[in-house]
Image (tube, rainbow, N blue to C red):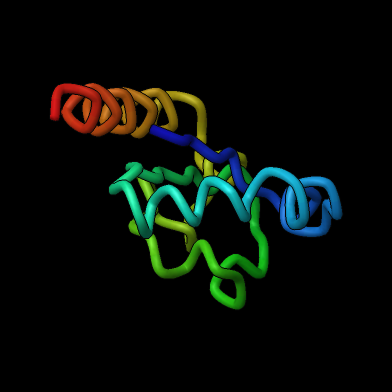
Length: 88
């Protein structure tokens, strides 16, 4: 399983784009690696290769835009998704 915390800085990183993502995307394609990404802040993720994977939370309402009590509920839902995916 690969979990990405997506922000605009993450998407703009050459290291991530050229070193981290390619082998993980290949494993997702060839070996069924589960990819989960979390929208931490507003970004252009819809124009990235990650848009083909399901986000763990609503990218239109990223974590940094959610008030703390609601954000904690979203984090619990993300946790549940990760645990469910890890059990497969």
